[in-house]
Amino acid sequence: MFDHKVVVKLTDGSVIKGFGELFFPTEKSFELMNLENKMSSIDLEKVFAVFFVKDFDGNPNRDRTRVTGVIRSYSHGKPVEVTLANGEKIRGKTLGERGNADLGMFLHPIDPADNNQNIYFPFTSIGKIESIPDPEKSGVKKPLHPALRR
Image (cartoon, rainbow, N blue to C red; front, side):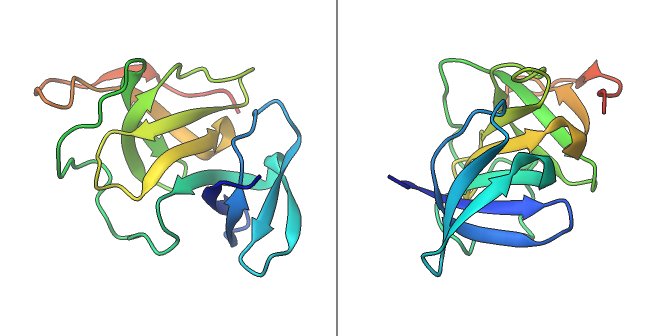
């Protein structure tokens, strides 16, 4: 049932690691089985970000704006750079920067070396979103939204 390794960063700075499923941002919460095999209900209003990861260790010091291998190819999605409220920048593809019901957005990192397979950000965690050129070509970033509604 819980097929995905998930790392949840809450707005208070705490981190919960465990196993979960994909969820809809319109839901108020989602279920997570932590590493001690205890079930938790995660309130989406308290979430800073949800990372669907390859492994729980990862590399928090990794530059997520740099691509270190062959670009991941997705049939859908707009390449963007997301600047989080804490200043961290992550590049990936999204199906829409306005997300689901203006609650948040999912981002697929374009770098295959990234530990993240999919990331959910509530819009309250995002400082700005900029379109980026095709990662295999150079170009100038264009702002999508000068500021997002909070």
